[in-house]
Length: 263
Image 1 (cartoon, rainbow, N blue to C red):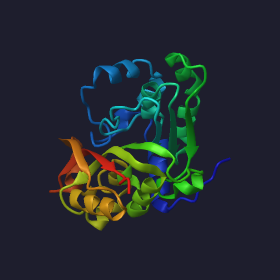
Image 2: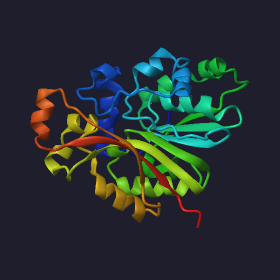
Image 3: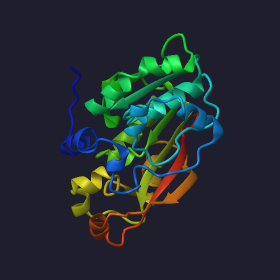
Image 4: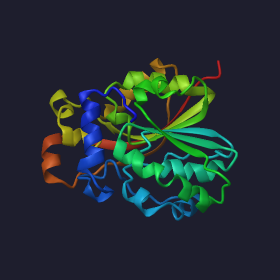
């Protein structure tokens, strides 16, 4: 059995997404599941994805950049594999996709549908694989330096307890000129420590959120060029108990494109 050395916060998140939540409808806010109108090529690919994979999707935006044909792509916090299978369709048989996640239940869903999607897409063999591991420790999952053209992530970086380490590892595995194209949740101010300790707020992608300017600083400190904002949307909280807890904090889902310099 695969094992990884998780922190208590990693264990909380694994339990929330592996046991507490059974489907996306169980979420208490739209922070991890914003609704949007997808482009035609994404809609077409989504129509081919297995229902169980879709039911356990907890993303907060569209993390699929243009021009993926033939590329090698890494999905950080790949969950049930929805975005991996979308990208599998877009990179084509010459491309490849690796998904990494720490939650056994989510990995099991993704892995049992690998052959299904290869057949759906008309591929001679699968171009997707899933690895168990932590974003902060991609080296321990066997991911080599400068081995990916693109990294994507969908509402997961906020769940990483050590965000500077996560950004350093993402920088390491990208090729020079590679891009980290991802959606995540950001707060309008630093989140108080007592809210970070709340397992529901953390699992709902709220209390682990960075303030936007703090993320930009950490990304540049890791070596990336200044992040380019692609899209943002306001996060609504329709659960009264959650709203009381967060008080005056405001949250947005923001998609950034972050480039690794060529030199």
